[in-house]
Length: 92
Image (cartoon, rainbow, N blue to C red; front, side, top):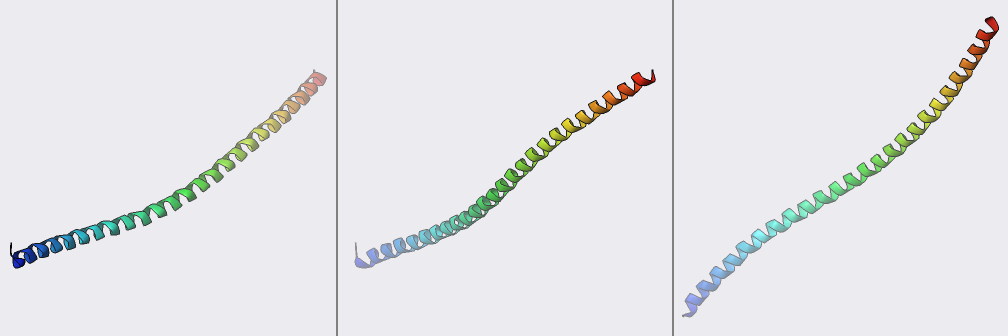
């Protein structure tokens, strides 16, 4: 094989490697872009998880307050029923 033929083959290989490198660079750019997007999504997920935790605490607190309110209402109604029964007995 002559030097010129060898040089042509090497130039072809160099050209193939340049094309491969360009393709690889594009893949790296896309991966970097996806990594940035994933980081943003993770931050959004963290914020959503914090908001959900806060909502769960508020729901728990609200549920507790409703239960306590129901107990008070039940006690008041029971007291009024007793008073009404007492008045009815006095009238009768």
